[in-house]
Image (cartoon, rainbow, N blue to C red; front, top):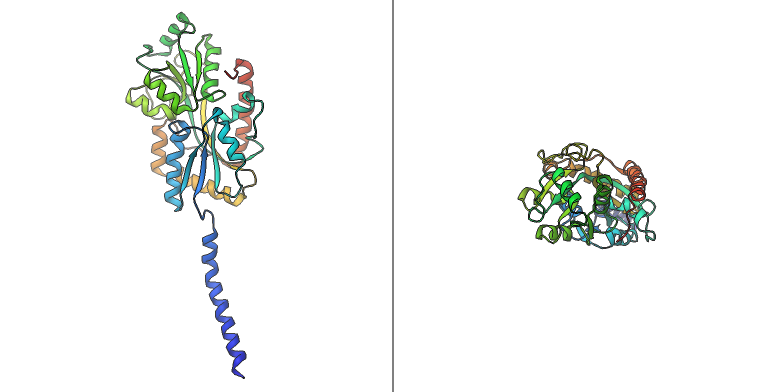
Length: 329
């Protein structure tokens, strides 16, 4: 009988020791992410958002050891997918990759079922690329901005431009261009930049005011001709394409940027962890090379600073919408 208390104590000590050894393993297993992470991209495959999302989250999948899965939810100028993402569970397993379009949308869509400022947590800026004016070389013979403007003024309304949808940066960039150059081009909205580019390449439309990221490979292949970029300076990887200012329209400056958000309520430690992994991936040599080929450099805008930037963009584009008279077609 005298041995029983000692045996009991030994058993308790063994159990406690086993629990102590198991604790770090259990904590590691419960650390984020413990299962695949969904990235809602609110446009069809083939557009600018996709061009940056796929290499970035393929890199995260390799680095983290869990799958980061792209879920394309196109429609309504990117607002359909944004609404879906806003209502997702804030558990760290759904993120939203939006773009400048979502800073424009509040001024174009009076009854959105989400708020990009109130219903999401800003994680970070992924890329910012200048808009580029691209034409189908078989339909439009112009090779310079001066040539294009001459053609537009001699043939008002004869040319059309494709966009990723009403209220997107492609749409507003076109309307701003028309306002600043006193020209008229017919707007043809699509359900994303991918389908719009396909029809531009196929010769169904004449031109497009596109984010350089999605047009880059088609410019390099010769299927599209770049007329000018709407940036402060020539784009990395495209030194031969002049800026609009160099080509005679000094006020025409438009950038397409892409960023990542989480649904409101997502734990801060998870959004911080996501930002940390994104920063690692974006600063790796392979993605730096990819970003240069797509006409941009590695950004450095995270968390609350990214949120402040988005807020300023919402206000900026509200002024552009007001001054240009842009509306849903």
